[in-house]
Length: 272
Image (cartoon, rainbow, N blue to C red):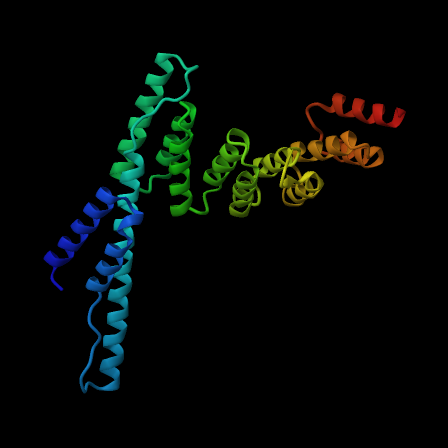
């Protein structure tokens, strides 16, 4: 297949994706992959030659698949980044909205230049969220999570949005869990889950998991004071005096900056 045919196929793909949406163009993508594949080797060649040709054919197929996937991702990035600016937060003043819009335009330009610019996607999502465009923020962070599943901040931002802005606790839990899967040392992920589990609604009651998630975070981040304080507070608030005293004493071993306050908590618990 010559380069001209590949260019025609690529241009057709981008047009289809931008005109009809990424998901509506999947059949076109499949057909493009098939056209980009090199026909299998046949005839009466030797086993060695046939093996070499098959290896070459496989490599070309892999390259063409990667090329087609790259086209899809770039088109999807252009579509999401190109979504119109929508300021839905009516409490923001005009100056703040204009500043957010200017920063979004900078992030958008960076994405159009380099579609997998992680920091630009994070900024685009953050500023869309700031002006109340929650849907636009979610689109940005979900795309980033797709191309960079190891980037725990994208998962966390999604969890925070679903849990505490949209009050969709199940989705929030899912994304917070993904954030600590991507980075087991990410303390804020454990703290967010512990906070989320204080909430109750029909079909969602995770209060019994608060202790578990805090202990999990402490196991992975043994020197983190905040996690240990939160566990001690949980014991105190649920009437587990002895466990709370032990937990606060564990905090003291880390020489916390608020040592006097921790000692006061222990004294109060022992006086009960």
